[in-house]
Image 1: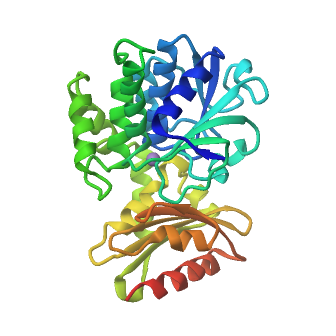
Image 2: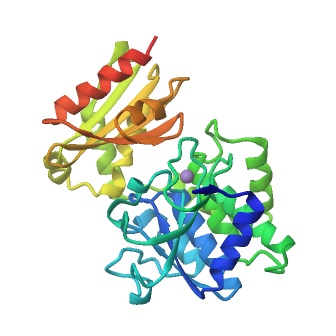
Length: 334
Ligand SMILES: [Mn+2]
């Protein structure tokens, strides 16, 4: 496995585009960054005559559908819905925003992945060639690639539909430019993007100020499920499959659990724990302090960023999964 230089990765992506078609793989439970990055890359590839299709283990969440629409591309991304010539075995793949092969979910091991672009600090390389620089979002990397492609002479200008998707990617992963991963470079990139898009405020409104009825229902449930430990420094929202179906909650709305948990004053580390299958619990972790949740999640075989990470815990019950996580977190709270 080879950590490519930036220029080599730009060249490599162009060489792959000569195949005429590529699958762009994003992580399961897709977020705005992976979706924005993948659609921007698809538009970029189209500009050099390569037909690319975004592929994911899970469907595009309704709230992110506008990104596919702004790119002018197909919003159906699951294996059962994509064109047959983008099926595993029929096409080479490029991975975006994926820190470890397990994040591919049901797509893990299915595609021949030639190249990966990612920005996670604790990435586990899973294909031969990868690029994993410091960046607030994978969208920021795609933006650098687009500009390098101009310098390399592959394209003459940034295709019009690239900028909105990249802006959505970066805005998503930075919480609308509020998180600690925002750097002067992030804002410089945003300044260039804003100059190219008709209305960045519409994108931010759709990402951050628009709630579906399902999201509101999830927030209501989260308020009831919230519990605390560590003298109020640890907040946990845990939910069983039974509760998910009783409240009729869609998986795309369950981010509400972690968002509510981390919003409480005095909380240093927040978790959502959801039952995924029998004895299997999906954990999302967020840090509001200097506590490194990626190392906490790595202990359970997961990973991510210092302030945002995830893992899957095996436990006999939801309550046991919660206590395993809380126990670990309590050790980190001083
Ligand atoms: Mn990301």
